Amino acid sequence: MTSNTQIPTLSGDSNIPAYVARPEGTPRGAILIHQEVFGINKGIRKKTDDWAARGYLAVAPDAFWRQQPGVDLDADVPEQFEQAIAFMMAHDFDQGIRDMEAVIHWIRRDQGVAKVGFVGFCMGGRVAYGAAARTDVDASVGYYGVMIDQMLGEKHAIANPLMLHIPTADGFVPPEAQQVMHEGLDDHAKVTLHDYDGLDHGFAAEFGVRRDVGGAELADQRTADFFAEHIG
Image 1 (spheres, rainbow, N blue to C red):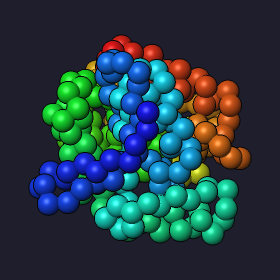
Image 2: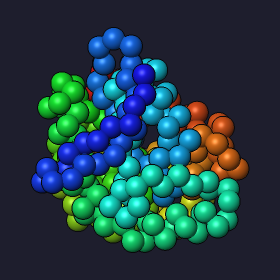
Image 3: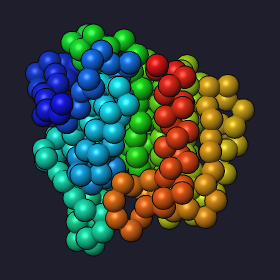
């Protein structure tokens, strides 16, 4: 069952729109799915539905709601791609992480699901790292997260498991940034990094030309196993 839901912010004075998919029966846990720069589009909705089909309460908050609610863009349309980048450039990531914290609280408090996993893509991969450092989310996964190399000063605060999927040919995360990530995180007891040789940013998209089927299936299986171990 799917629904469009309003989730209170931490301050309680506004609501975060979210696409929610519910499993049959009691959830085995919850997964918060953070969008790419393209909004809650059909790819993110499919990922959310798939997590619900695996038995999780699946919640995909609208990260751009403070700018423009309901963004739904296609990565394969150049004009929409540029529009998506503009939304990301104007996004307040610190506020965005606080909004995700509010969603985590809502899942536990209002939905009665204690264990929460976080999975994010692109800008959401960056937020997954931020959530691992700044919230008490139980486990986090970031796919091709941008600018993580500039957030390593927060790594000491990562107390719960974090997995990062890194395509080595990522046009938005150059090799020198990837090297910094490995140097800073390879020895972190709570962090696991997986490299995907020759793959580019967006390789795990559900639809469109960016998708690499083999890479996506490998990363998604690793993510499913990771959450099965740490969330339930």
